[in-house]
Image (cartoon, rainbow, N blue to C red; front, side, top):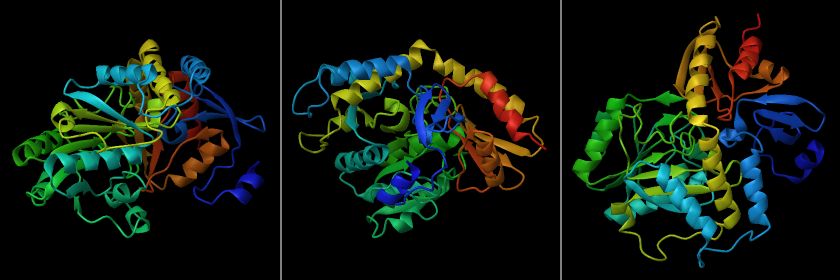
Length: 383
């Protein structure tokens, strides 16, 4: 299996030596029979856990009825998914646009901002990652990514995350939008103070700029709330557009933009488009994912287990800080995290690294429990 994949597929990601065969909850099973505790969730995708029964059944049922038809027809599956998604969003976000991925959601969010303002420039932040397509990678100011996206789309400006003065210096009448990850995951799980988010909202209102939250990772319950938008950690700020993907379909590729009525009023027929976005199979997965999170009370579980994890990490001598919120956490060690990452993998525990060499990232399924934390701590604290 591994040899064939290496032979016939382009070399992109540096792969772990795991041939994944099946999954259940927080566990990933390899073809050789090994069982892994998954604290990474396949880049934060397995939000409801691997193969949640409610999601699997919804996908099976929809697959037996209609796999796909485009947005040229109405669809009950699409209507249900849109209504459900809007129902859990902060009240100002009243419309949704479905697409296929996080980078596509961010591309369309920037496009909508330009349409609404008739301006071109976009402010994003050092350390932010927004995807690998042309406009999204040009909005990314993290390590090598913007470089490999050259030639970059013009009109992208870089501000310092958490520094409102650096934003004010750039936010003139040519700026259409300010876009940010409210928690910068790949940069080492960096957060800004709530006052920064409130100041951004005020600045955007004063200068007619659209505020976009890239919640591709923070959305769909990962922080212990449905969204960072509107949360206490973000000062209650609700942006004009929220982008989503990752855990939204429990593994079925899907992205979305949630937008306010003022933004929606500027979008006309044929301004946006996508062949596969809003397909019935993906829509069934979206609805079932949100229902599973509700039915299993995963939001309260995230908060409870996060608190337990933080208490246990305080016992680990080499841990110097814990960054982030909910189940998007960065564990900062006194020395490089990579040896710990490798050791955990040897102990059959999957975690993630980041652009900060001292930070180990955790993006586990929202169904993670205290007993799983104990396994992780025991392996991490080996001396």
